[in-house]
Image (cartoon, rainbow, N blue to C red; front, side):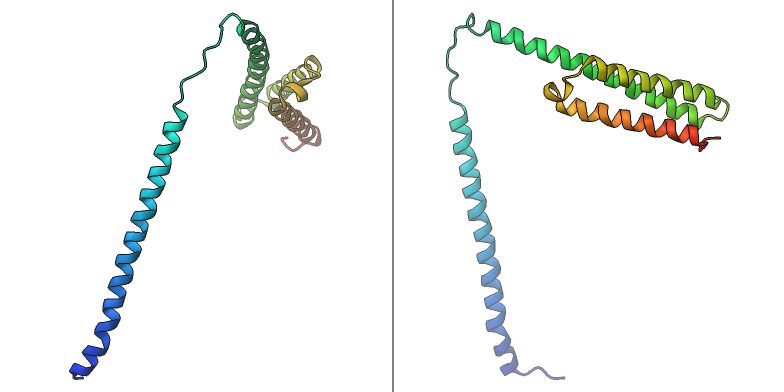
Length: 156
């Protein structure tokens, strides 16, 4: 196949158009990037306003209330973490063939008792800590399901 000069001349305008499009898109991207960077710098300079001076004696009472609430949440979270550790022990006991099902059921019974005492001790848990409430509800459901599986004989 021979390439004729008239064919080359027909292709050259298409190639120049493609080059112009890529150059335009690269410059358009650069312009957009520069605009976004400028916006980010403007927002950062606005965010660095100096804080208002507040009398520390006026805010002392509110800090004590916040710490009391967070201490209660930390205590509940600690209890939930303890229950989750017992779940790990329960899973390890089930996986160990030498441990026996009696010890696994004993651990499961402890888990169910701990969840029940946590729910009884914190009746307003849903209002104060809704995230922890959902975790405690799921732990209660898991414990009931596992006890049902044991009583049905799934692990025998």
